[in-house]
Image (cartoon, rainbow, N blue to C red; front, side):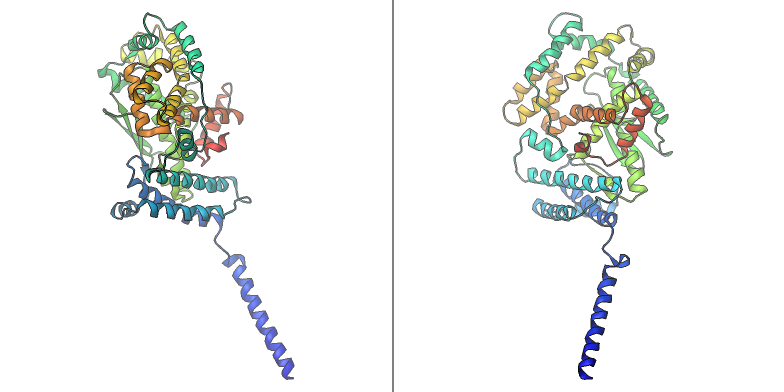
Length: 442
């Protein structure tokens, strides 16, 4: 009997232990689901971004999350090594997660957080003194390896430009002289820019439903290394600044209105806030780390959005028929002006090559300026401002040209080709309202 009693007791204990183990692993008390775990990681990520911002004034491009997080970052400035250790710990946690069986948007969210965090770690290392080459930095920050172009590549484009730009003198001088026929007078500037933004917004709203409360404030500034900037404030509000250091050429009206506003940065940020921060509670989108993969998507879609909004000859026609009269300019040469601008845009990769050689120590500042004058067909002033931008933002230059090309190629692979404008808008909207990464475009 004693044996049987002991056996029964042992069996009872085994049953209790088994029940406890089963309850511990049951769905009701299992580990939090992937989305919940990512929510906690995302909060820590945002706080790390704000912490890096205390060491780098350019790093936090936008933030509209809880004010107390920002206040805490200001009041308790964390050392770089503490930020790095926190980021490495989060990265390890992210690496332990598996999203294979989750919906696509959650898979994208996991990968997005991994890459954003990886770029944060790289930025902290650089702020701590680590040296990266141009290509290493571009890969670490923006999730891509930029292509390399020879001098001959640019000389072929310059030869093509040389054949169509009228006048005498050097090519950069002739381009500048021709473009000065299309400088918007200062007393017409605000009228032209606001009319262009109104048109860009109207074209965008035909294809993308915008929040009713979305709006922007327009300001004119000076002494900046950039031509225009969108400062997103949250709640679908933006501050759009336009730099008046350079002449207000006519083409800047559409470039800036579409790029900074509709369907560019303003719309991009509005959709991310609406779709993810508000609907899903994904706090990682309350902040925008400038030196991160998000920037390639943001700049690439903003640039490509110009062509989406004004396909084919529509841009030239709007400039000729609407903007020239508003600005009091002669639109008779609008078509040749448009052709010149298309070719000049193709020379955009010259900025990348100048940045690569300058940042890698192959060029002095003066040599980078002279190289851009020759191979980028720039005036001295424009080349100097381009190098000013490189000094401040380094490999960020790739996000405009390479970003645009990757976005265009991705959208066209989804069927959004130039001959299918409705499909192009549809795929464009999908991209700017998703957490897709640059490597996901290739």
